[in-house]
Length: 101
Image 1 (cartoon, rainbow, N blue to C red):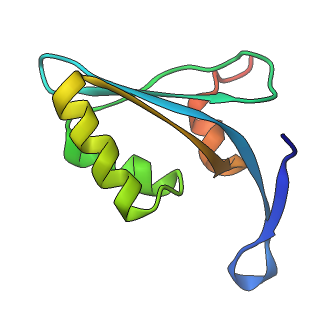
Image 2: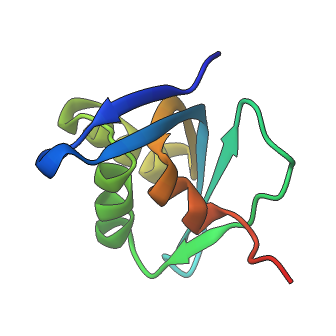
Image 3: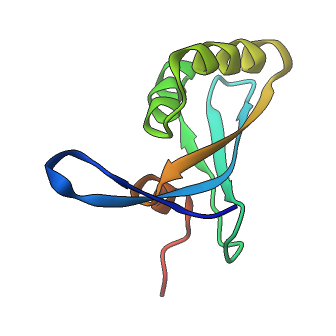
């Protein structure tokens, strides 16, 4: 897959990075999310949010359309894990990478 350059508001260009977004629902209600870029250095780190409602905000930030967001939430509630292939902005993908030294 190839990274795609898109133009956002005010003429700013952002790169979209293809990959997989994985989510796990823990018994205490927290949701652990990880984005694995299709091409990358393997420097992913999980992002943990306190609830499914908070996870929905992350799903939206990752560019999931509302109908896919609803299906992902239902799958998390049912099977406690879910994944989706998507492309996210590089600024969002940075939240899923370890900070450099």
